[in-house]
Image 1 (cartoon, rainbow, N blue to C red):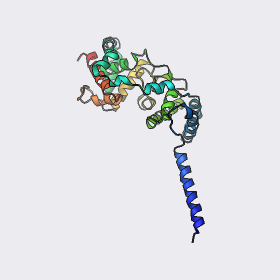
Image 2: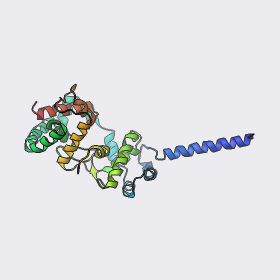
Image 3: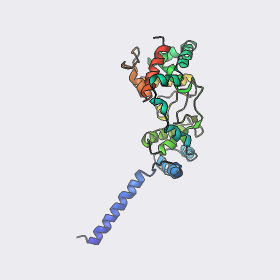
Image 4: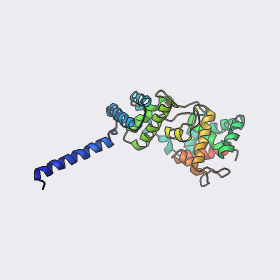
Length: 265
């Protein structure tokens, strides 16, 4: 028979154990400002190390800084709320189409090879390339790891960016990226702006090289259901692959329209 004092002691011990387990399972707590970032980094580094992340990546993570510019950009993505016409004008759709047609001709062998392998025609690939980086001219100058770590710490979308952070750390351990890699505000890198998880899944070579980035983008579209010869306008079979690339409806429709114009359809 157990005494009342023993029951109370056991209950308190059980509560303490549950609390400890909860702390271990969720050690790295999200935050809404720079104040807790250094503590979060230490806690996340411990978790990452326990999951097999190597010292090279852990060291890079500990050197990451809170990216205030990334948070500001994440809170102000106003262009996606524009009308389709306004969005395309703001993003320079006419210029993208004009230059895209020229690139389709000058790099015909590259695009023919990609299409033969994946079924993806030049138009949507060139439209994505132009939309994302102005054909490689605007790839971003933010520290990739700091941007992604900041968004993994931030309470707005920690689950999504925690996955991206683990992927980035894996790529750093492999030597594919480094703590000094530069990218855009949300950690996208390369000529067509790949996030780390997509680099792991679809990346082919150095994505700062246009041919590799375009080939990797075609890999992504094919993996997301692209069918050779099918249409890619809204309501057609391949539009879903474009939807998988970017969640914003105006972006999706703009890519489809520009791609069709580049392909001369």
